[in-house]
Length: 347
Image (cartoon, rainbow, N blue to C red; front, top):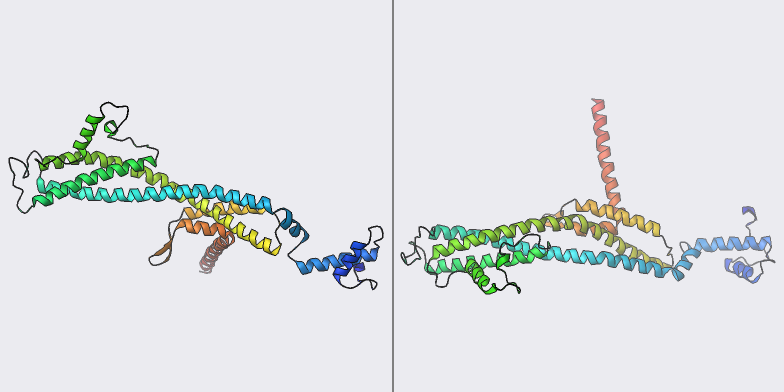
């Protein structure tokens, strides 16, 4: 049976549906060449009219949707868990680090101001029993307020630094660990008194310059402790934010795209499983996310920018658009290079 025999038999109705029903009611033994040709032509016409719906897509939409749904759901959860975890940790650690930097700036200014106003403890200029009068122009209430703010700022830096230290698994040793409360330490009471002496002003402030110097010595250890933790957090979570999260967001964008396509294909009965194509898209999205992670914020207009993580998600969702953009850039550079070469040759 060749292509020339694919013509309608006058004994059969000319509609494709009638030819198919006629063949269905006829046994395969009784089906002659003409009926077979009519059946093949009818199926060909029906397939052309139903395109892109095919027998495979109808079968897959009925029987093979559950594995695809479970696979996409599993990968979405696998990607969502580390994204939410690392994004949350990065946000919290960044907020604490920002507060520590602000407190360090405040404490530095207070340390300079108090030293300028009160002078060294060995040569006090005021606020002591021997010299109760403060330097001219200074108000005792203002100096006491500054000392109280200085001490509270140091305590805030110490507390936040210890909180931030947990984000790097306590990699930085605590300079005051021997004085911290320990249920197994019998000297807890005396240690707490030592911490109070180091971190708080003396009741009554009998010697303001001495208190300022004592707080400054404590502050130097606290500041060193906090800055070392800030460096560790900056490196660790900076690497996660710039290298790992863009790739995860790009993969999550691919999951969103595949879920949308899956929904459209089910609605139009055009779904056909294609795991190889999906894996290729995931791989391309991961490459695109890694490329985006190497870049900084993308500026849209003056004062407005888009986070690399948002761009990575969009890249994963629209991989084709991203690589079309890259292809356009390559073509632009190639044209410029060829144009420059032609100009150099002509001269």
